Every structure is written in structure tokens, then in C-alpha cells.
View 1 (cartoon, each protein chain N blue to C red):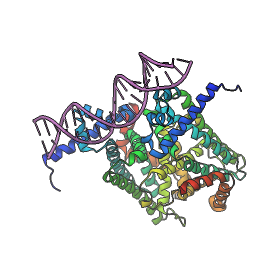
View 2: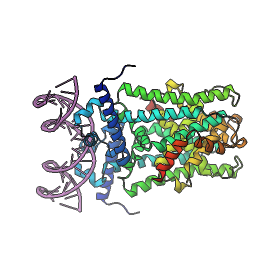
View 3: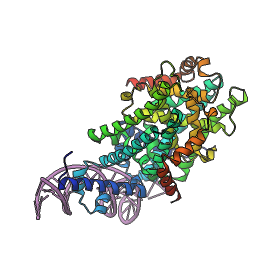
View 4: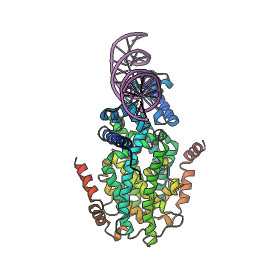
Amino acid sequence: MKTLSRKQREVQEREARILEVAQELLVQHGYHGLSMDRIAEVLEYSKGTMYQHFSCKEEVLLALANQALAVRLQMFRCAAAYRGRTRERLIATGLASELFVKLFPHHFTVEQVIRLPSVWEKTSPRRRDAMRAFEMQCIAVIGGIVRDAIACGDMELPTGTSPEHIVFGLWSMTFGALSIAMTSVSLSDAGLQDPLAVLHENQSRLVDGYGWRPLSHEYDYQATAEKILSTVFSAESRAAAARNRA
Amino acid sequence: MKTLSRKQREVQEREARILEVAQELLVQHGYHGLSMDRIAEVLEYSKGTMYQHFSCKEEVLLALANQALAVRLQMFRCAAAYRGRTRERLIATGLASELFVKLFPHHFTVEQVIRLPSVWEKTSPRRRDAMRAFEMQCIAVIGGIVRDAIACGDMELPTGTSPEHIVFGLWSMTFGALSIAMTSVSLSDAGLQDPLAVLHENQSRLVDGYGWRPLSHEYDYQATAEKILSTVFSAESRAAAARNRA
DNA sequence: ACCTGAACACCGTTCAAGT
DNA sequence: ACCTGAACACCGTTCAAGT
């Protein structure tokens, strides 16, 4: 671990400030309000300098996404380390996802945009691989919980099913529900006033469908959720609540 | 039903051609390749004329989305009308979603973009309401199947759960899975070579979790799926297969 | 009444000129 | 070696002038 030269530190710091401002612009003015011009203007850099740090606008977005994904992975790892039964640890990771979108509300926009093919193809292999790695590590964390459940007898894996199948089920349901909840305009008209509560119910039913014990009617998972929020993620919960009030 | 004047017909026709070209540009060059400039150029209209049909670029996108959503609703209705048990009709709607994304691959991009807050807020109330209406009618179709299942005794609704909760579960899982499958880069690295097959498995498990009979191990739903594809959606299946080959 | 295309503001990106 | 900002190409949107 070599100490960085003053120059290198300066570059790193400037990069961090660019991302800071980019995030601010995104949160305050939406995707439309984010431009290389504006970032440069706020930071009083020239446009040219921006391009020494990021080869294009898309790279700024992907860097922003990766920053957030690093935090999410950390939160997943905390969640998976919860001392409890395997299904409780799974619930902890679900709550981590929800807290994450509350703490990084702009990330949803970023991720949606970055995944557009015409945006994605302009990004650099280095940052793409970083994103891929975060994604796979998240899958591995949840997959680990599934494997633990099988190892300790909380669940039998159906033949032809791999632990990743279950991970994909939870991932797609949670991603889909949060995505719809954030952007759909007809949810409460359709009788879905509290999409998060409904998501929890559906997650339970899915896991019940795989026979992961204790089944939802055999155990008080509501109490588990409350305990997790007040212990593992007490700081995050308070921050999310504060953000909601604002 | 009054006949339209020649002028009115011309306007309608031109609007249709604008959307046609917009879709083409989107499919061939991605979101980045779609611009008012290019549409006008291809159709040999002036830029100004474009703005007599659509007040902004976002309106073109939303009109495109609504066009596709009308087709999807139609497909859902065909699916729900399948003569079979309630769970089979549910499977038919799931297959309809999949065929829809295969037949309108650009729609996913459009829907992702249209839902960005900074894009959404520029659209007109008229087209927004149209989109909302399509969304709610889709929910109503699936909700109807759930209600039928309850009515005929294939399922008991847990207390505190409404049919829309189950609809939301299936909707979020299917939307999430298709969205991830279309855009994620690490799926097959993570051992998920056939995300659609895994989606089917997870849908089954979710519905099993709600106790919707016959449960997946009591019935050959694989055969059901094949029959649906070759009867209700035979034309769509063939079109999707042809598109896959291209 | 409708259409046109010049004009404007803004944006991403590049690069010759400066330090 | 690094930074700057003028310059270019492109885009969304408007509107005075034309028919």
C-alpha cells in the first residue's frame, strides 16, 4: 500500500467532488438537470477538465451507480450476518434493499438509465466489470443464506433448482416491486396503498412456496423485522425516517 | 360515429407515420438515436410540423408506449379468456407478458425512460391518463382471475389480503425478472442461463405459497404452457420465434 | 389556416493554444 | 504536463415569415 502523491490525492479528491455535485444535481433537478456543463460550472472547473476524469457523461453515471452499489453490498453483508434463523437473515437482506432505495433515492434513476443499451455501450470495461462484480457479490451473499438454509435443514432444494433460482426470485420480485412503487401512478387507485407491506407479504409467500421453514404462519416474522430495523440498521432506519419527513 | 374529414384523416395518418419512424429509429439505433430532427428528416417534414402533432419529444415516447400497451391489454384479455382452470388462465397471462416483450423489444426501453420523473413530468395529462387506464385495466384482468379462483374454491384468500396483493406479487416478479433478464450482464455468470424458465418456477412457487390449487406438484402446468402457446398465442409465438432468429 | 426553416439556448465532446 | 475555453456538431423548441 503505497502512499499517493499529492497530485494523485488531488485528482482523487476532485473526482469525488464531481460525483458529489452530480448526485446533488440529480436529486434536485432530476436526470434532465444533470449535465457536464452544470457540474463544471458549479465546481468552477473548465469543461475540458471534466473529461480528464470521466471520458463521457455515461461514465459519471456509472461511477455514481458503483459508489452506491458498494454501500448496498456492505448493507447486504451486515444483513446476512444477523444472528438468527436463516429466514430471518433473508428478511434482513430484504429490509436492506428497502433502506437502500430510501437512502439513495437517486440511485434508481441512475440504474434505470445506465441499463439502457445506448447508454451502457458507451461505458468503459473497467467500470462495467466493477458493476458486474457488485451484482455478483450481492447474489453470492443471498445465495449463501440459501445454502445455509439447506445445510441446516430449514429447506430442501427441489431437484433441478439451484440456490440461485431462489435468489433470482427474491431479487426480481423486490426489484420489480420497488421499481413499480417508485414510478407507477396507478397503484393506490388500484387498491395498493402500502406497496412495501404487500411486497413483504409476497416475499413470504414465495419463500413459503419453497417450503423454507419456519413457514410464515409458524413464526412471528413481523417481530423479526422490527428487531432487525432497531438493531442491525438502527442508524439507517433513522436516516431514512428523517429523509421521509423532509 | 362521424366520418372524419379528409384533413383529419391526413393528420391521423401522419401521426401514425411519425410513431412508425420513431419506433424504427428506437429499435435500430437505441434511445440515443431517436430525435425529433431525425424523425422529421426521414419523413421529409419540417421540424415545426412535428410539434403540431406532439408538443415535445416526451409525448412521442408516451404515445409509443400507449400504442404498445393497448396491444398488451388485448393479449392479456385473450389470455384470461383461455378455457381452463384458474391457474392455467394465470399462466396464460404470464406467457402473454413474455411474448409482449419479445414482440415489442423497444417497449421496455420506452417504459423505462417514460417513468423517469424528469421525463414523465413533461407529458400531457391526456396521455398520462391513457397510460394509467391501460395499467389499471391490466390489473383488473388479472384481478378477475384471482377473484374467479376464490369464487370457484381453487384458493382461499388469507384475511387481510386482497386479490390485488397477489396481482402485485406476480406483476412485480414478472416485471423485475424480465427487466433484469433484458439488461443484466452478470446473469449467466451467476448460473442463471435461462432466466425465463427460472421465472416460471418462481411464479409457480409464489402461487403455491398462496395455496392456489392445483399446486404445481399436483398438475402438469408445463403441458398447459405448451398448449397455450400453440393455441391462444400461436401467431404471436411464431412471430416471436421469427424475430429471435433474425 | 397551415407549413417552413431560420434562430436560439443548451449540451456533449474535442483540441489548439496557453501556462 | 496540465488546464482552458473556443469551436463544432447535434438537439429540442419557438416563431416570424411565407403560402
